[in-house]
Image: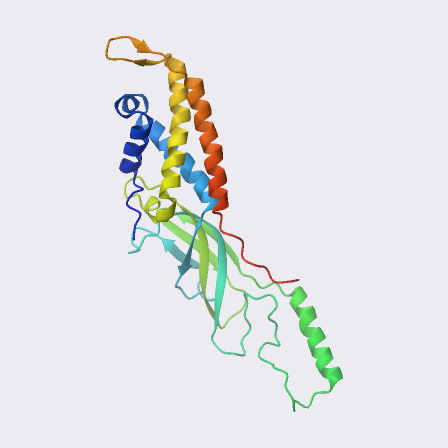
Length: 258
């Protein structure tokens, strides 16, 4: 379900309301609001990129795969791919998994009683498997880039007879027309996103008020406002909220022992 609370119009209204309603609407322009959103999204993407599964068959015969484009029914709101993990499906049990560096040409051969092998032969075969695992680096090369309005990933699989899907980590985009990327942000992070964007807006507003010396009041005079204090409050809020976001960082997946 899309996060309908995070759209550019709704974010603009909430930031303006929190910072002072009508007077802020005059002081903060659209470019300032865009800066609040972009700065917030930039930090969010660094800490909380999203993962998606691509239900595609990756084969040696094909190198180019489209992850996102206007023609794709469920456009995922991707700004760019930062990591790809390949998920293998062998076409036959005896085939080698090209995405597992510990899988060798001996894949599919199992030990068991009655195999007729001596302990020396078993030891030699296991030693060969271990040595081969050290030198085999069959993780496919990949490169993701935008080509016009299509996000494309090129994948080079080193072996044949393999099909695979993939899981990729990507950045949320800030599509101001459809708010596609913003609406993919989890509902639980909505409050954080609004708070941080407001803190960024506070620093911008403080800088503006320092420049002009205050805001006009209804009597025709000027209310003096300490823009420096507002800037500092905004920076303090940003530091605090960055720590909150870091506490929500998705832990790294466990690695296999060397």
